[in-house]
Amino acid sequence: MDGKKRGEIESWKFAVCGGLAGELLWLLSHPLDVIKSKMQSDGFGNDQKHKTMREAFRQTWRTGGVFALFEGIGPALLRAMPVSAGTFATVEVVRKMLSSGDEMLETLES
Image 1: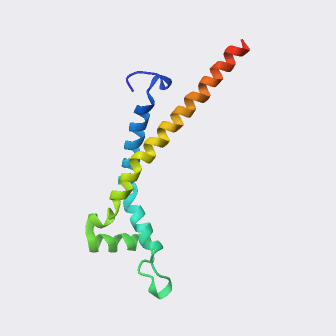
Image 2 (image 1 turned 30 degrees about the horizontal axis):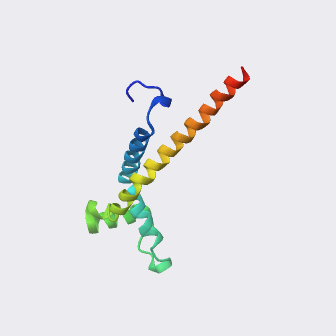
């Protein structure tokens, strides 16, 4: 980012990048989450509709197309931005606090 060292980058930039990363993660992984949820809510034994993930994917694709694989993504995307942004910013702030403590210790020991 702008040729700066990691410690010189403002926390809000980490938050923005983290939020965008969270959005991208959900956009890429949501179809697998939909299939997982369908299999988890499926019956057992003779009531079972999907025996494999591949079968669940095919049936979902045939009945609803690509839109069925992204069903319910709205709430996931609304949640992803603030959660990921907060996580990235918090980790960076704590990392800076811990590393500044190391520098302070080195100064005191000298």
